[in-house]
Amino acid sequence: MRPGWCPTLLVLVVSACNATPSAVPETASPLMTAEALLIGGNECRSDRDCATRVCVLERCLGVLTCAAWPDRVRATQSLRDVLGDAVIRLELLRHARAVLDDADGDPVVRGRAALVLGELPRGDVSARLVEALDDPAEPVRFFAAAALHRLGDPIGTTALQTWSTHGSEAIRQMARAFLEGAAL
Image 1 (cartoon, rainbow, N blue to C red):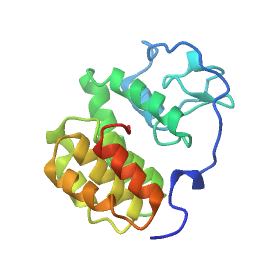
Image 2 (image 1 turned 90 degrees about the vertical axis):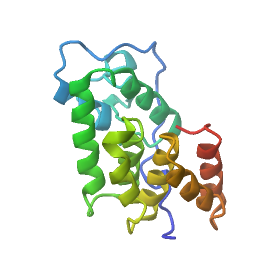
Image 3 (image 1 turned 135 degrees about the horizontal axis):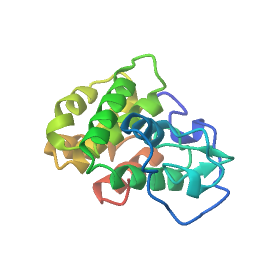
Image 4 (image 1 turned 180 degrees about the vertical axis):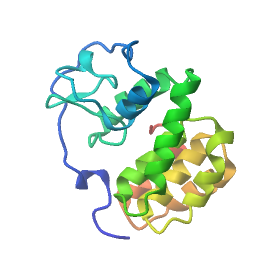
């Protein structure tokens, strides 16, 4: 295992506000909405202004950019809230796959992209997530297993059970949390 792959390696920021969540702005295009849900937006000054409902230091953060777990939980819920829109769902699929497929990208962010794929319909993503189980980057393999498990794929469950015996206590705890359904 490469030391320091866990999300704390990324800049840790603390949410400054906990405003009541609001829906993604109706005027946003599906492409802008998908990008905001994944990486955040630019015009945010509070949670209420953010498409993802996560404003940190006056920056709207998406699922891929949230360093703090509670923020990522909120951003993921915002993503789940719009998955009924087929156009947004297809854009999310396209963008998340592009991040996951970027071999030069940050392994933790690529792993988070695998988690995003785990929110989409199984038929659209299972084959790519199974491929990610063989990725050279440990975070990608871990989160691909977690995503497959969330989708009800026994391959993901078996892989995640293997992670629950990892040498790192933090990874074992995360694997158990996913297996128990307590994690994102």
